[in-house]
Image 1 (cartoon, helix red, strand yellow):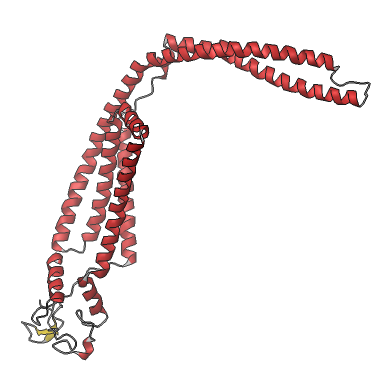
Image 2: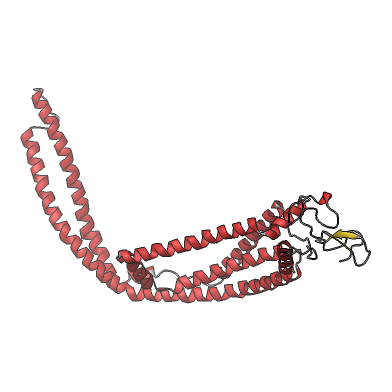
Length: 345
């Protein structure tokens, strides 16, 4: 009815014939009502999230197989090597570097004492400190050589650990995917009926132009968001990680793919913001909305001539403004949906 009314108004505003009539009817919601509807949408979405959490908690979570990984011979060998060899070499390197730094500071202090001709030395003679510095430096070189070999062996052991872990991790991933599929199935039993009922309610409300239309729209929006979220999480859990990594590497590989990506982003920006601009422009320049606004201001919806200076026909454009009611035969504006005298259509 609303669309046919808008069409009739558009034709009335475009036609010059006086027999065309305008029926005034407009849905307008106050800012407070829109705020309450938004809050209602948030509350419905929050309750849906709480329902999702309860459904998810009802399915046992898959624990990460730490015990199985730690029991691997390759993992044990790697841990022992890290603890008994690599860590000790790293600690010894830090100790030598600290000792060399302190010895250099002591040597500088000893030189200043020598220049000042101090008899009592805090750290000994320069020759003694140079010997300590040289010995620590030689040992540090040896430790660095051993540490480089240990780090190389550590990398080799780690590669073996990763190969040994693969079957366990892959099994864990499949268990997680199966659990997520079960969670999605339980969530679908909640959001699919919610979405279907909300869609049916909103469709019927819109068709009947019910006062509950905006409330049903709030319910439909909340149900749609819950459905998209549930399906998105399920889809993400089943997309192979290798595929995502491969896709990311392709996007980063060449300048051409990056440029294509920029084009896609630009097209998306143009589509979103351009559509918003077109929508706002149409709302502002829509002759139907303009006609309604002029009526509220007491003006002719076609030419803006004051209605209080006109009678049956507009004094500016000559269009018919009033007609007689078929029931009480009293005059009223042509855009009224009901007679103001008898209340009949």
